[in-house]
Image (cartoon, rainbow, N blue to C red; front, side, top):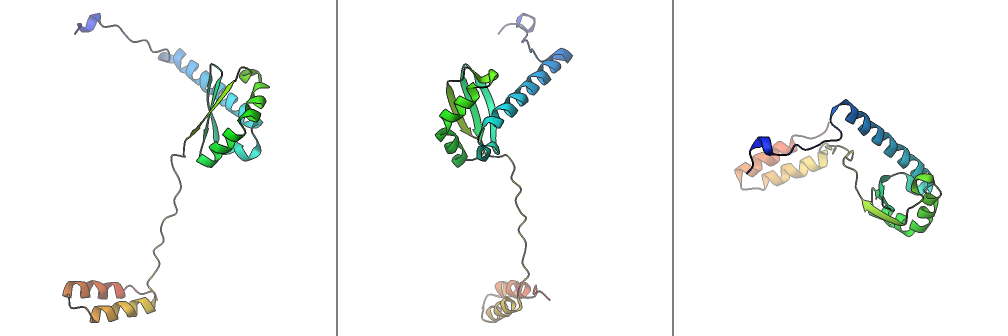
Length: 148
């Protein structure tokens, strides 16, 4: 292994304040490209579709679900024709679609329903018919959680 002073330093083009400006400029360029491309998509495909990249004539889009990705693939010739009308995407010849599900989904919290009087009565009856003492105590405790 080479001594530390002989190892090559890696060059990070985005280090320092000038690099941060470059990064922000590239992000803004990407946002504008996504905005103009998504405006050309059919309205049913605009939500849940993201522009990923366009390199060497290959346009990459991301869909949030498999059915939406299939719809994009089905309409790929129309989408590429519309994209070629835009100056930024005039050399697009291939469309690639990836399925990228959303990272976070708001899940509704499970609501605990109170125990009905009828179910509480059934639990008490079952507790009376049970020989196991520990199980009987648990069933009686559950039966006491009846709604008022």
